[in-house]
Image 1 (tube, rainbow, N blue to C red):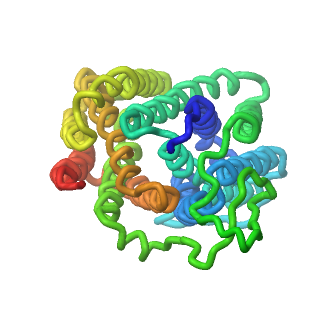
Image 2: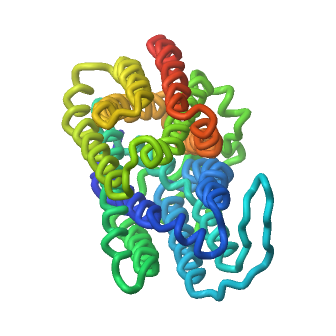
Length: 426
């Protein structure tokens, strides 16, 4: 029987995690340049987190199936906390030059001690950054079938709130005499708060996927936190990629997951350049645009999706949302400010009804036993797509200009076409 657990502590953890991540985004590029890097080094630094998340997320997902969600969430958030400690330390280190590069391809930059420390911090945060996939698995554990789409929508809302509050808070804190130090310190404190909430207010949703064996009472512990008995058995389920591929319909959904993230990240890499070069926006105007976009996403993923999910299936919401999302990217090609804000509305509606519905389908298809492993590999698929999309998005815009958004549209339209297969899922 599904246990009655409030989702609000989980939503708060998700919000705090997103807030802690987004609060430093406006300052990262300035820190990279301050410590000797250039635009390419900044791009690599941005891709460091998803690269190491690609390695760590599947492991953490499998561990959450074996040892329970709460302990792995605690482990993941602790890794984030330590990474911010390292990041903060980098701000006070002397800028000692280690290597100077002047290349026609890579440009001119200098590797310094603080720059290396920042890379280490981002790598550690990515390696332990499976908290999103584990949180999704936790949510699936405690959610009844009828509330699944609505609850995943609430998770998306909590993330969007974090992305609204984080950069705004960074702007206020960064305006003080402490500069970028105060936002980093705030991220550290926010991460610590998330650890407290997980430890105190978040009950365990799943002890393990290991069935009880009264004859063997040995227990493997993660971080020494024991919440429920978790007995050993001979056939412990530790799914690897080859095992995931054998699960019915999961490989197809992972491909869709990859394509959705690919389309998004081509856009995320190209749009800031487009806004500055074509729309002539300032940082303030860009911030207003993303704040409005995030607010509309909250409205769609909250009350709108809650009502729609009661009348329309997740399958049709995924299909309809993908075509609306694809149209958004087409509207950006013109380079008109009014059409850009119309595109934002299409983006909010399309992504707002598609993504939570797709996550709901993925969680249903994964089933209870393999939930953490599937979510972990899905997160890795998203990380791989993020790395590729972030790298090629800027290159595409340099080569194609506004037509780079056509590539994003074509990727999402491919998702639309492929999504019709979901109707055949049992």
